[in-house]
Image (cartoon, rainbow, N blue to C red; front, side, top):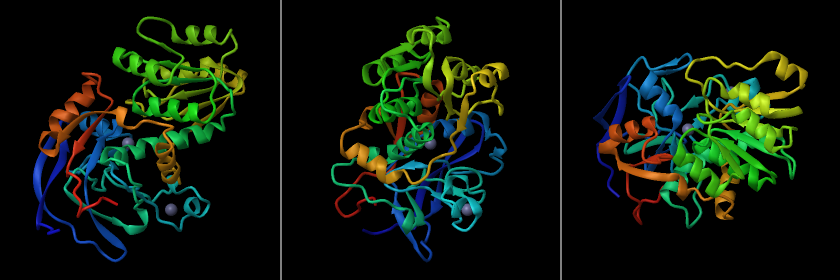
Length: 340
Ligand SMILES: [Zn+2]
Ligand SMILES: [Zn+2]
């Protein structure tokens, strides 16, 4: 294949100011490989940067290329030598370079370079979209890992966006008993009920805490996963959990704070865990897809070429038209260029 000198990229200059630009194709350094990008998912975190310009103290101050859910490789590059890395928690590395998070450029571009050791080969039968969706699936695996779920335990998942749905899928595969979900968006509720949930409650229509507690005969669920990032969902997660149970928070709130009622979490002696990205989950994510435990293709609801990325972000931000993951199809797979 001939590699061009310039490429199309998309850079965020400020809130709702996403521009298509031309940039030179990067040159791989020692231990790096040049990658031709295939599919890139639009993550909820990308939408936070697009709409709000920040997630906590990670603020868009200079033009940034977003994008970290992409075909066939792991985007986070830990330092490898700090205490967190040495103890097997590269996701907690304070010096981690996570692509598409300010100030590190991401992959809404035709080419990118990555360390070869961070690339995972996709088995035959995987589409480029499957490859991109391995990243949120990896998050869901890490989320369920943190719960130490036991076979037959009941769970609640608050929020039926892609992360909530994948969390439910992984928990099901890990042996969860009853799965209760909450979600205000009707299309997402229908998808959840169709695929992973025993019951889905609408927080705009009913008291979802009462509904879930009643569904468990007044006991509460063993584990509640907060996957909405809404102002009241962390507290709801605490309230639907049984005494001695666990709450795992994976959602990213718009306001940089999280509230739970102190007496509720204290009297129940709840264990509360927070998800920071993922670690060592790509091989298991690949194995889950290979063995048919999860259908990633169903989540890739909308596809756009790079030229229409603004339209794609607006659709995902508005959660319209039943969108789950919007995928930017940057390059088409071809026999001589297999994304690895
Ligand atoms: Zn993501
Ligand atoms: Zn480190």
